[in-house]
Length: 64
Image 1 (tube, one colour):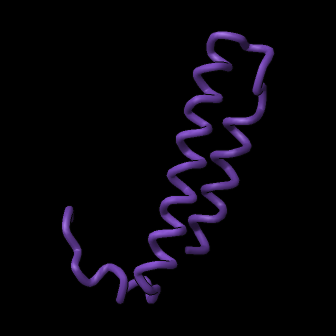
Image 2 (cartoon, one colour):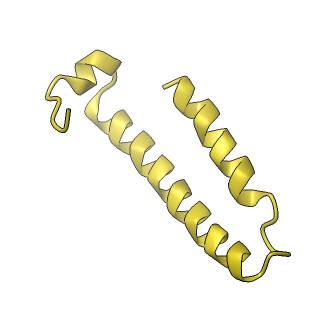
């Protein structure tokens, strides 16, 4: 479903805490994307950064 106007009630969170949480995750994902591009070009840089970052986000998302 693209639109769920009851999403915040379903996850029992207010608008601002939801917005902050989603923005934090989005910024981390963007940073990991840049690190992945750098790692692709220079394989000796950010060797485990992307995989560890994604695992950390997955763990955090399971407790949302």
